[in-house]
Image (cartoon, rainbow, N blue to C red; front, side, top):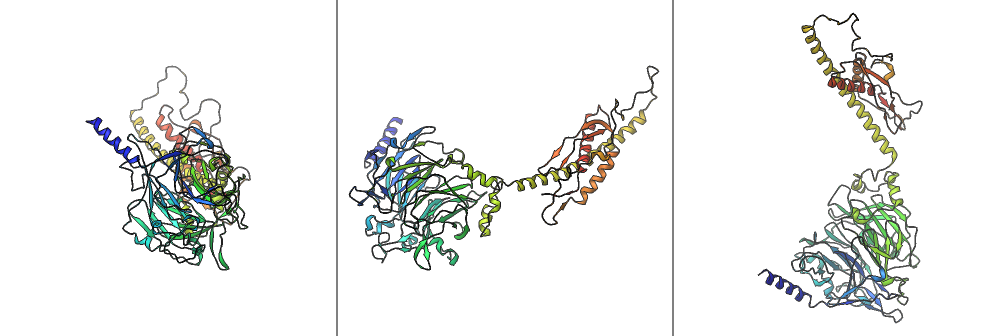
Length: 633
């Protein structure tokens, strides 16, 4: 019976795959140009979707109405780019499109599954009909690619495209302008689709002439669960007009420090409105931040090596756990030239770093992150230049985001690896550990609060660390003083009880010889100098003349209660004599320390508990000898 059930399920899977025709592509050099497409990684499979491809006749192009996929290397294995084998899924149901959004959503967030086996999904939305073709209403559909998995698990990369049922709030899409080149990313539990441009090729309801473009301020949010679509109602004041009204820029995803669910979506680059006429390229120093949860916009000025203005570039976000670095590659600059550079925008510091390596000029390309690797696909060497072939094998490039070097091989990694396989480069790490966060000038308190719970990794300046250690030292001295006082009074009370008991049972000393009684235990044997715990030699002061003060007159004093404890301990110490012990030095980053001194403690050497309490009292007395006013740098 079990065997028949297994055969039935296997037959069901085979029937599902009948419409799927798979062919292998050739890894030819040089590669044919492909641009205006999107790429994504799902279940360790790389997908390349849509766009346009060169026909080989001048600058003519053809729409690409298919999906290519290739399995990425297994863990701890590597593969050269020219040996990566792509296959084509030819039952492509969505209409041909360019400059659309493609979101990879794993099974944790996707409400769709493939034949009962949840493997997540790819979602495609928006975009324009290639070659300035007229849009039709089918472009309004949200398309989903559902990966196929065989019994026993595992992903083949194959699957089926299908349009998704209209959500209950489908009116949101009916009232929104459909665009291409929007700033879009899957962030948190949903996808954000910001702005873009409306043309006759993007929206069937558009009244624009062919070739005309109009910026859209619509911000759409798609929940991969059951919530469907939402449209932003955020008020765009003059300060944030260019936040949503943006075309051909990029978006990233940054998680709030100390939060598992709060995210911000920064947008940058591309074209924004201008008072002087047509839209102009945005300054890359202004980073707009959208909070999908509160439907609110913010802005923050970035520092560092600000990149030149650009559009039609690609960007990926690397890192996790509130630590994100956004890598920006290529694009088209103000003079119309295609760029060959790369920059890094690091969060939460809002600081730009220029990568000291160059590549081939590239625009209208696509990229995605895979561990420490940035996979770059396609693109044009010059805007509109389809005649020249791509020098990259299979039109693919691999950039190592940790070593900041281009490479010809791709290495597999484990998804659960630290920071998903990405480690920041040394120059980024150095900026944070040397106090970079302390120099950020916040334009908006909401952004500052978004990152204020950073750990010492972000606020790594030595002054902050030093003050924290000194504060701990002062608190430690206070605690030891109180502990020592308690130990002293406990000891004195026990000694009083023992004295009364001894007097009640005392008998005359009877020596076995004529020698006088031996020295009492209150004296040290040998010729060593006897010192009292209350002596001035126990007081610890700052070394030499190295005292420094805070700017101005700010000084923090210990409470009067601590001074009172010090006096009690000095008095208690002056009454105490016992076996010799050495107190360890206490040092801090400000060179305040308790000198290594000899302290004597008296008591019953055979009573370990009593000696321990005496040592604690003497140690506290020594610590209380430090100055009560700490003047810090």
